[in-house]
Image (cartoon, rainbow, N blue to C red; front, side, top):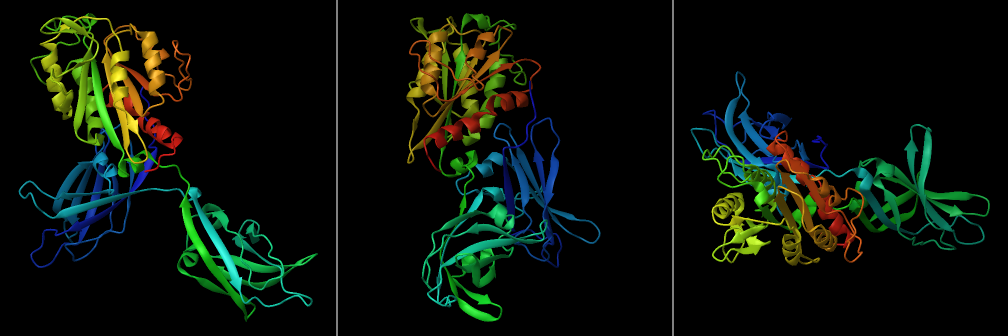
Length: 512
């Protein structure tokens, strides 16, 4: 069942415009930008944000950031409307549209487009840049401190100094100690071990918020204060040393030996893409006899003379291909068929090139549709329905390392039950250890209950041949029924892909 889920990732979108056309004769525009998002063809565009107005410039750099929800499984379209604010009526400067995936998958997190209106195709440039929205709970400060020139506060020896970091607690109406260092014995120039502290607990993510570092001398029964300093995360980042005071007296210096902020949030899918992860998309089409004779309107392979009416295979290729193709690293899609007899000798094949050439790669989604149209008028439908050969073919092209990051997605479109279930389970278990995801789309009204064995959904598959257990769930099955729209099909089949990709990469300690 189709369920609308919230975005797993959000981005802060920054907007800059350059060389904007004037709508007033006497002055540059007082520009602002409206941002609209459309998540599917059937949904209306929604206004998701508006920048501030910047007066009297053709090159505005807007400070307002637009929060952008990101869904890998949807073909999200952004529209930008740049206007010139006027006392009576705001004038249109220009418009631009692009897919969210175009920006989020870019190595530099950036994209530039040309603004236009109907009568003018060049009304200036719009520059877009995205950064992931990071929760402060995932950020940690790592800090190493030392002190120099501390005063002697003991009569019989030097001090035994330590420090603690304190924040004011409104609920308790007092200072609360967050961390306390180890004690350094008999020294006025202590060096302490590095400490780590969550920015959420320290300053609620606000790096300008003040807190106190207090240096004390450890005694047997109590501690005497040596000195303290009020500071912030931002100040620690910029300063090398800070004066310690007690009352109005200077009491040595606190030195920041090392300072860093570490984001412990797991790397996201789009961060891997921006780091250079290459996605390879291939598809395999079922050409078994159970689809029906291709020249009969009842056939699942029947091609309507009216190009606006697509058969289930064409619809699935179009829907899924248009989501995946923007992420494909080279724009070429591997296209295969199985379960057919091939000319000229009627040889049965369970893995053949859809285009009939030595190279199975097709140029984009339209190239796959063209190859499919050629194949249904060339090959003879036969059988049985064997999945393992095409899975093994995809598996042979999968490779991954820190330096070569390449992940494959195989989409199998079929009309019936699997004939080689044991071999298919064995191939899927092997594939779970490789950078490969498998999407299965069922078309027609056959019994697809056996597909549930492949879609683990929390329970790992086991090979009936080797006894080997899969290390992760890589299969997603969806029955493409007439009640499922093209947008819903793409969403249902592809929603799990980002998690499958990132779980593989994290388990192999691969970073962007």
